[in-house]
Length: 489
Image 1 (cartoon, rainbow, N blue to C red):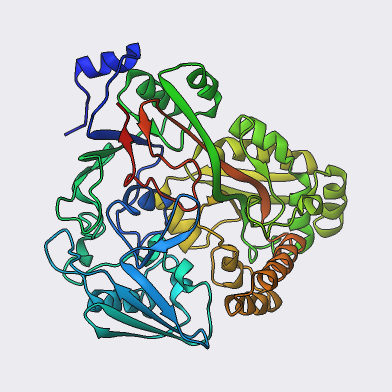
Image 2 (tube, rainbow, N blue to C red):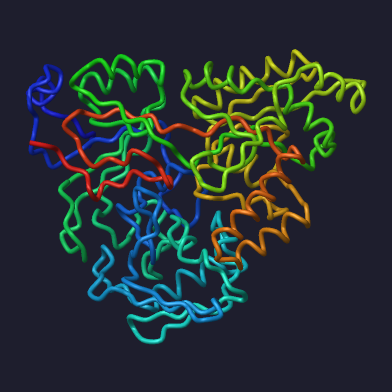
């Protein structure tokens, strides 16, 4: 059943009178997840529904990006950094009533790292040599080499703990350990979660949470204004934010995300395997025009795949500054007969709007593009899995994910051994200053190789009823964590 407020409640919201004490919320989302299994899908929309709400991992991200205890209440690491011992919380049950214990952790991590694993972030588990249940509440993870980042890796949505009894239905009827449990999924419309009365931790203030899927920006605006949606944490129509900001019924929440928005480039595609053409593309792009035209001014220019709010960020935008004359000179040398490329665009507004702007900018220097608008399922199959594309635009919202450039089989197919060696060293390094130095070198390499067109860091632009409190301002991971959300009196 579609979650609708009563006429009286809708009127209260529209007139600005108090509608307090509610224990239900409707969250707007621009994209519907293709499934609800975060261990078997790459779409950010999956985690936006289930992370911390329905599924939990050994560790979890806090709203400030910190790594906090999750299903593991504590952990220790051996002196050589290769053995992590996790102490699990007692009396934790899955939503179907089965208990969560060390065997489930062993199952989840072994499943994620198996040869036939479909986990979108399988690299997170590649360094695991073995996972052992020492006793029902103790798990020992042995790594092939030291990795000070291992608790961080375990906080990703891809590393949540699942049970062998229920994992096969996770895509459509997920069973986790979180404070909310799955109620229904009306395909094309909404997913509803309800409070888990048997949750091991503090009970959430909300009894019901409905995630309403509204892809059209005009419909999103109308839904917020009518009170049919209580909050849109990632609002798809930034052009109307000023109207909400001027209306006391609402609050605009602007923060940062981990989303590097890039013109992803197939480095093994014909012509694009030539760094001169990739460089020509980079210098043809006017980032500010894209930020202004597609995001209405919200976004921070980037010149590499690293978030500007992170301490280790290096500003390399100068390497790919807007310089159409340089683009034309490079193309005259590398492709005198011209360049024509396929530009595949997924559904987000930043991609569709940005794609039209980039196509026009590339045309100005002599690069023709054929635009195809894809739905997410098709984009995942053709672009992300099939690598059948030339260019695409997507925001990589996973936290601190520069390591994807060390994976030659990743969808943009970049293969540089020097980068892979640096990444391997980074994974074994815990000293903050040494890590910063390594990250600076890695950022420099991919910037100078023009692996992708680096556009902007996605801003988190949200709108909410002014009486809602506890929504995340920033997005250290792709999540709509409702565990601390409530209505004020």
